[in-house]
Length: 141
Image 1 (cartoon, rainbow, N blue to C red):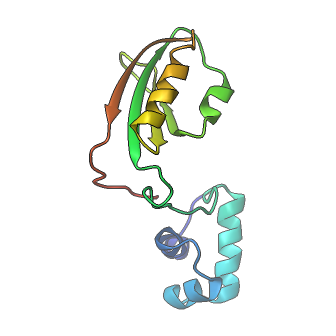
Image 2 (spheres, rainbow, N blue to C red):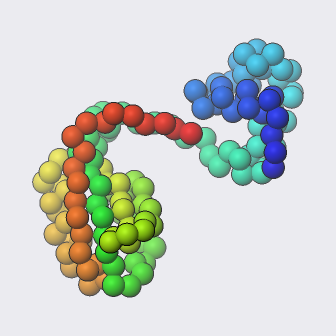
C-alpha cells in the first residue's frame, strides 16, 4: 500500500501518541474527522498499523535489568521458548550466533534463575550475555 502526505501526517501524530482522539488528530492535521477515521481504518486493514500499544516505564513495572542474550542452537527452538515472560524481543541474526534475545528482569537474581533453566535446554549449544548499563535511545516506530 502506498500512502500520501495525509497518511504520513496521521501516522506522525499516532507515533507521538497512539491514544489521540480522531478529533485531535483531525485538528492537528487539518483534515476532517471522517477522513482521519477512514484513513486509520485503511492503514490498519493494510497492515501498515499492526497494533496500537503503549510504552511502560521499566522501573515502574520492575523490569529495569535488561539483558541481550546471544544464542547458538543445535536445532530450531520451539515457539513456546519465545513465550517466556522475560523474552521481550527475539531476532534471527547472522554470524557466530543464531539468535539474539532482549530480556527484561526485576534483578540479577531473577536473571540467574532464567539462565539456570536455560542451561537445561539441549537445543542450545552456547550463549553470550550482555547486560545493558544505560538506556540511550529508543524509537517506537
